[in-house]
Amino acid sequence: MQIRLALPSDLPPTRDRLRTVFGPQRPEHRMDPVSQLIKAMLGARTYDEVTWAAFVRLRSAFPDWAALVHATQQDLEPLIDPVTFADQKARQLPILVRVILLKRGELSLDFLAAEPVDEALAWLMRLPGVGVKAAAAVLNFSTLNQRALVVDTHVHRVARRLGLTARGGDLREAYDSLMDQVPADWGPEQVFELHWLLKPHGQSICTHFDPACGLCALKDACPRVGVAGDQESRIIAFDA
Image (cartoon, rainbow, N blue to C red; front, side, top):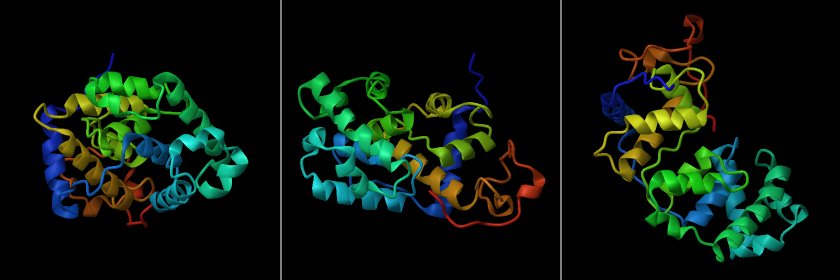
């Protein structure tokens, strides 16, 4: 049984306080869903700037993503290196494209716009190598513009320390818990903004080591779940 640790009203004040630090967050550009999926796959456990550089190189070499079906690991690995697990991702991408083509008869995920979000998420997660983070990114960040929160390592850490999710849960459990708490009147843009407020907060203040709790805009409302007193010392540089 999943225990809910926070009331639905906890997310709007969290968003509002983080807005005072990072400002309102709005999408500037949305890619098509297949491009977003490929970028999400490249971005697993990888710095954002490294991911974007690899994505641009890959897109330049393969203007038509369908051509990835015929690509080999040797073709792709030099293009996407130094993303983490470049060899594994170079093997996965052609398989991923091939599976979509076999399932749909075309390389398009636009049909997911007409599906309920939970069903669209489940469909994506049945693809090889696609977890809840990548699936939610496709639904929320791309032109699909669906109501799905992207829970990465930083979002998960902040939510756990705030008591919004279970301390020992995985990303899927955190996704389910947070989506249960998203206010009913929030659309995809508000969910997008929540991600892009929590993520930089986790990168710059609520870091894995040495969280700067004294500088945190949420400090008076945060139970600091799992944070030891001697961890709260200094700000460290942004990470992915």
